Length: 200
Image (cartoon, rainbow, N blue to C red; front, side, top):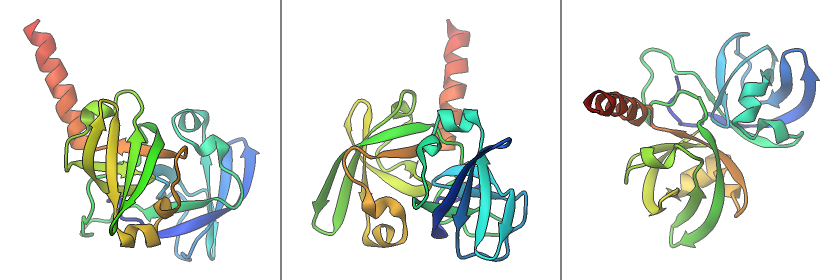
């Protein structure tokens, strides 16, 4: 489990097709990683396969590539990184599983005073889980829903700190991002669906 508070930004310096899937070597600032630990890479929970001082490798199988943008990642791409939470860690963002729900399209980026507003077109099944001032993970970053500008859209407001410490400061119209809806909303939706089915 993660909090959506990005630890650092890493850079992909090698991409290879392996028996384990599409493998990425990521440069990072950590030298205390362990094989088998989980790291959220742009919000996708991946397993460390190998590591060394300042780098680690992860691999994405076909099911992961089908619901993310990982299939198109190339050398030089910067990615948001977060290590899994430990018992006793502060939960400053919200509960993030690292299970990407789908890919959203950046429709608009607009600077309004000290806030950068970003409108996202959401993939099927995600929009109904959005509530004003609720939580949403975008490329691994825990964010607050600023507005719901349309039936399948959400608006987020990026603060200066987020722009400087994550990859979201580089977002432009037409970009694709990973989105993960709040897990609590998913469970409520599932429970309500079961309840409605019993009433029919």
